[in-house]
Image (cartoon, rainbow over all chains, first blue to last red; front, top):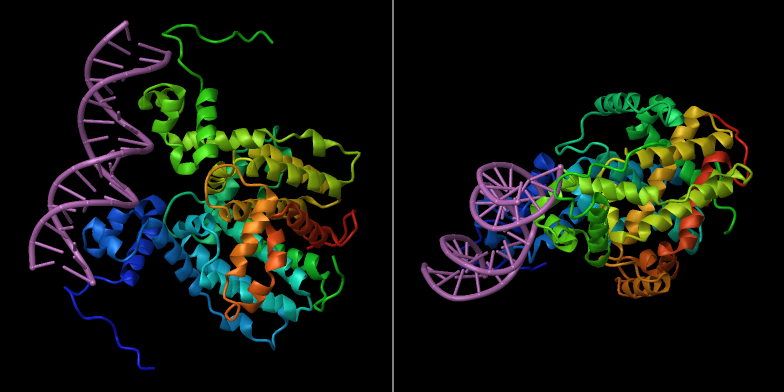
Length: 234
Length: 234
DNA sequence: ACCTGAACACCGTTCAAGT
DNA sequence: ACCTGAACACCGTTCAAGT
C-alpha cells in the first residue's frame, strides 16, 4: 500500500526490462540461441546495442531472467490442491513444467547451463517438497525424491530439444515421430541390431506417453508400485 | 590386415585431427566452453586459425568428435560380462559413463546440445538394450527403459555441472557439498522453509550416493523392487 | 537518468595466394 | 595437399559524450 509509481525524471525510458525480455524470447523462439545476441535484441527493441546495459548488467543476467520468467509462468493451481491424490499432483506439476519449457526450445540451453537457484525455481522446489511430504516421505527422502524428479525433467527436456536441432518451435509430435522413424531406419542393422530393431518403440521416446511412462516408473521406484502412502526407509 | 599407412605427399601435415581434439579438450577442461574457440585451438596446435579447416569442416564437427571421443573412452568390459547380475551391470555402466563425462565438465554442454546419434552413442545404447533384454524385458519395454536411463544420466550430469558454474575440473565432492550447504544456508527461511530445511540432505544431491540412490529407485520402478527377472507388461 | 557513436578485443568462416 | 595473411560479418562490453 502507498508505493509510489516510479521515478519520472530523465528522458523517460524508451523501453522496459520486460520488453527487452520479450525481444530476447522472440529471437530465441524464432531463430535459436545464437540469434538472441545483445545486438539483435537491441535492434528489435529499437535502441543502440549498449543501451541494453541500462536494463541488465550483462548477457548472463538476461538469460537468468528469461529462465525465471518461464518458470514463473507455470500454473501452481493445478497441483496445489491438496484434495487431489499426490500421485496425480506430481504428474500435473511435471506435465505443466514440461509444457512450459518445451514451448520455448531455444531457451532450454539457458535452463540447463545455469544453476536453478532463482526465486521461481526455489518456489517450485518448495511445492515439490510439500507434495512428497503429503505422500508420507520424511525430509531426507523428500529432498532426494524432488531432486530425482528435477533430474528427470531436465533430462527429458534436454533430450527432447537436442533431437530436433533446428531453431523455432518444436514441430508437432507426429512429425517428430516420423522423422525419428526415418532416421532409425537408416541405422546400420548389422552393427546395432537392437537399436535399429527398436525403431518403432524409439519413436515414442519423444512423445508425452513416454514422458508419463517414465515419470510413473520413477514414482513407483520412490514409493512402491501403485501405492500412495509412505512406507520403507533408505 | 594389409592396410597401408597413409598418403605421404604434400608438405606433411603439421598436426593430426587427434591433436586438434586434444587441444580443444584441454581448453575445455582448463577454461570452459567459450575458451575452446577455433582460434585458441589453432594457437595451441601451433597453426593459423583457418588451417583447422583442413582437419574439420566446422566447429560443430569438432564438438561432435569430442563427444564421440568421450563416449568411446568408456570401458565396456565392466558391464559386458553376462555372468554378473544385470542390476549390477546397469549400475556399472551408469557409473562408468558418469565418471567419464563429469571428468570433463567443459564438454558437457556439447553432450547435451547435439543428438546422441554417433556410432559410440549407438553402441552404448545397444549395450543397454542387451542388458535389459537379459533382465527379461521385451523389445518395447527395453527401449523405454534404456531411454529412461539415458534421461537420468543426462539430467544428473547436467545438474551436476550446472551447479558448479566456473570452468576447470569439478572440485572434490566434499568441497562441493560444503559450498552447497553454505548457499542453502542463505536461502530465505520464511519464503522457502522446506527447501532451506532440507539443506543437509540437499548437499548429498551432488554426491555419488544420490546418483546411485536415484538409479536404484528408477530400476525398481522398471522391474519391481528388489527383483531381477521380468514381470508386468505396459 | 538515459541514450548514442566509436572503439576494443574478440568470434567463425572464406578466399586468394603461396609452397 | 597443406598452410598462410587478409578480409568479412559478426560478437559482448566499455567509454566519453550528448540531452
